[in-house]
Amino acid sequence: MARPIQFRFHEDLRKFFDRYLRGVKNGWESTPRVRLTVLDLGGHDVVYRPEKEFPLARTQYTKLYLDAAANTLSPVPSQTRQPRDTTRKRRMVALPSYTALTGIRS
Image 1: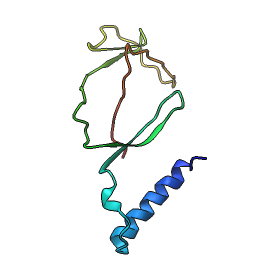
Image 2: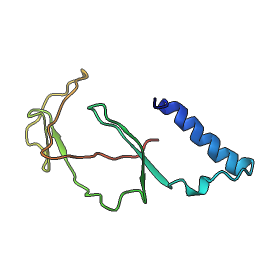
Image 3: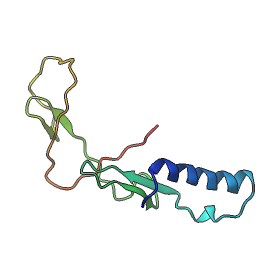
């Protein structure tokens, strides 16, 4: 049975603090410098995917604009103006191929 994510984070922090505050040689130096958590809306999250750098070297930066009238993302801004809607709505946008949206959590 997999451990809950919160437990794994606490375990990771304990290992880091043991190494640098208590001087315990526990192999922390071999921990990947960058680890990503990929959240999948389908429920198959990938926790701690190791990477060599961030931002990822293979990143393809693409500026996309939300077209609220057509409920799509587009490489060009929409020419139609929508009245400001203050209600919160969830929108689903279908992308033509597998896409990972990456950002920094602060």
